[in-house]
Length: 274
Image (cartoon, rainbow, N blue to C red; front, side, top):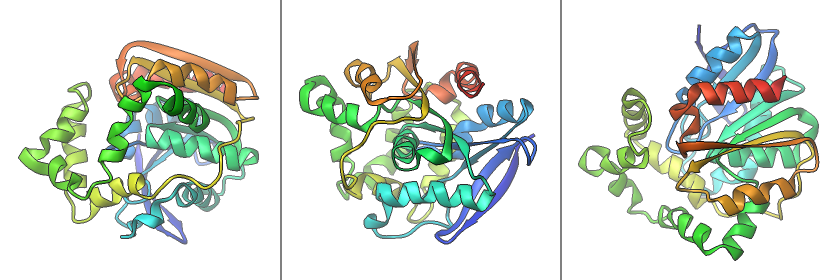
């Protein structure tokens, strides 16, 4: 059973899906671009059945109740602040954190800046920001893979993505995930201001300061068919983790691990939690 809840914070009200007993061990799951909380439907349900309290929010810009207009309000500082604010609102002193894609980047930065709040960290696809920086500076392949991050800052991006019945967004998913989810993502991003808000994550600028190493117990999961992140950054990530660390490589799966291989993703999350 999955419930739809609201999480009230000073920034506004975040929509979320949730499952599991209210007093269960808390797990927060952060989605990526151009997805939403329903990316984690399978994992939220599995965690709930196993006695955890799993909550996956629609993050800043994706929740209509937290959709500021200025790109400067989508910095990593704001995004990490939202994670802590949501945990505080839910009454969670400590919690397990899971992230994918942009949600993975936010999860890494939360572990860097608030290690005392996290029990464990599980990240899909997105390497540690320090590892990614090294890869961008030394690995030509990764620089080519990441060109889209710069391209999407252009103001013409919204039109390009939504033209022709949002063909560019459909193509982005490589026809690897459930069509009903793709249609829901497109419907959400077609709301006035929604796609601009989501793209403002890319336009907000780089984080202030260098990324430190992570001391929290961490599992990083990378897939061999990921078009956004190559093997250099994936293998480099271990150097940025000082606590217990586990690396999992999933064969023949694309960037969209939680949705393309939901059972695998759910099992790996449970293993890191237990």
